[in-house]
Length: 291
Image 1 (tube, rainbow, N blue to C red):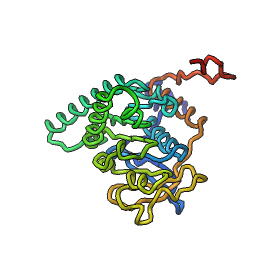
Image 2: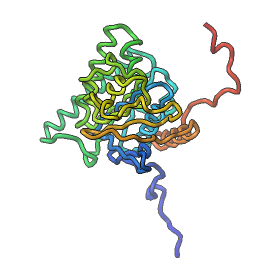
Image 3: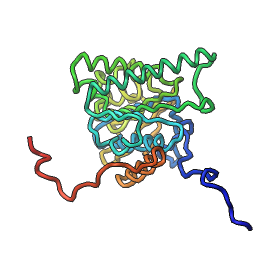
Image 4: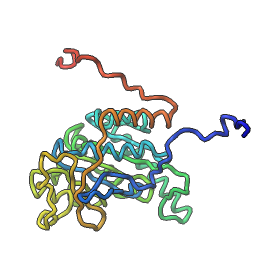
């Protein structure tokens, strides 16, 4: 058989073949059945106590998005370290900077308006994978930090207003939202905002009220309560989908090495460059803890 003489441009490039419009694998339910969730037209709310496993779910979803050829991640992480490994894969990475957060949300709002104007001009109701327009996946780790801690009260109110608009209108514009918080309280997640999220994951909670704030009113009384999830069961949550019944599941777990490897590959496949994150130091300098 003669050797192929195909030029480099004729070869299939190495790269991811996932699509944002594909269902995303999240983990296994209590019967061992894989749980897949479509995220392109969905909003996912993740909430529960610290160390309950929220980071596993948010990183699993972010990994899929980062490896999609038709997705553009926009990341908000005031702590910097949860979504930080994916920074080089993102169109925009927002840290503990309220001005940057609000500016980014305003830009997203403008893009959303432009997409709806295009849909209206073409007599369409939503963007699809055949349009060739990339989904803009907006991922927020710890909403409470932006809603109640950083910036002024005026800035916090504007953030919540812009965030609510993105959650409410982003669906048909292929701008899904994934948001996580450690504080499932009514001041952070009012009912009117919660109900905009078709998918909600409740990790371990300290009260039935907190569980119901995430899943919806009355579910704890029906036997679906995140207070029953033991501290020895990290990564276990109740996941409710639009109009359905909560499902007990164990989310997929990525180690720090897994995340680093996936983020490195995703950055290379998108930009041609490896991640620029420096290697961890052998020891921590005392200067890190200086006032």
